[in-house]
Image (cartoon, rainbow, N blue to C red):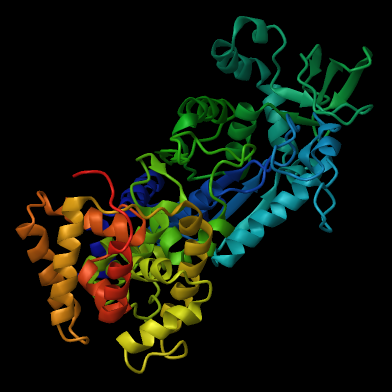
Length: 528
């Protein structure tokens, strides 16, 4: 069976999406000569990880499509940087200065950051590009300001003016009664204040391509709808963009389901075809609230990469895109280790690997061959019990556990050791609390310490683990996870941890005994 035949039968969600697009094309290549994928970004706040996720997921669909169809493809990362600034984000410097420019296009707001970029929007656009470039995405950045002001959207804007009544018929039923009285798809840019105005269109002349509106000073003014003198309200703007560019595929968050439907109707009213796509679920913060660019309550890409690998972030984005997921630092360790396990099962010569996330994360290319001989969870717990402030401390134990291993021979392990130290120092250490054992737990700990002492110092992890199980059962811990939780909470100051026998083999029998004896020398916790 050929790779394309296998792709037609693959069950991974990017292939399901790609097959919808293949069916849409019906074997024909678009007149523009390529299939266009698009992602959108609103640079009113600093780029957040959800924006990265949209580009990553769209890129996965694009690559799956390329295996099913020979048509050329392009990916536009579109920035709505001509939108008027509605509020100054809470997480920026010089916020008061930015607040003085509310209503102006984002590319017309002064840059509050100490960077060379000409505007707030330009700075945020550069941040987005740097994030996407770091991951090697194949994309083309497109600025709304440039498309409007250079005339690239002029033909489509004139089409909206010509179809003004049809667009209004779509939009008005979706608005509150009070908003209907002043609504217009066109938002003129005031020649006196530079603000994007939400004002009614008083007169319009499609033949001349102009509208009349009342400016902020009360004067009625005529302005062309082209050349950046007007922009569109956002739902007509989205539909116009699909029409003007011929977008074939764009996904969006679940909160935009109605907006996608309305913008699709606008696109069709202009004579275009709404793109394919799906609605993904939103990311939630640690409190279960939707993450927001302006509030800054989600993880940034820099924060994720301070504690986890690029591959772990891509895996998080790949998994269950239609399910809401908490986006918090405590999800990172599992993603790092899950990626390592998936990589172990990956074989690029096997067609079944088209359903392995590794294939999608690396766009079908061979993934790095670096092995991960120790789990990230194990390194995190080693960092915690050692109070490690430097990865060299961890290597003292790693080198003994893996004879001959060095940072040079195990570069991935060295990198993970550094990430583990960051995680311990920033996340674990400030919140760590080792509780005292109960009387029942103390007796079990003393029994376990005696058994460990009777074992050879170089016993393997399974030998230590056998004794851990035996002590838990003999001291009546039911279910056994209660016993393991006690080990983690008393010795490591957390509610869960690695396979304990493996941890003892890594940390060292004598070091573990010293930790246990130190713990037993302390006070006693509440009664069991």
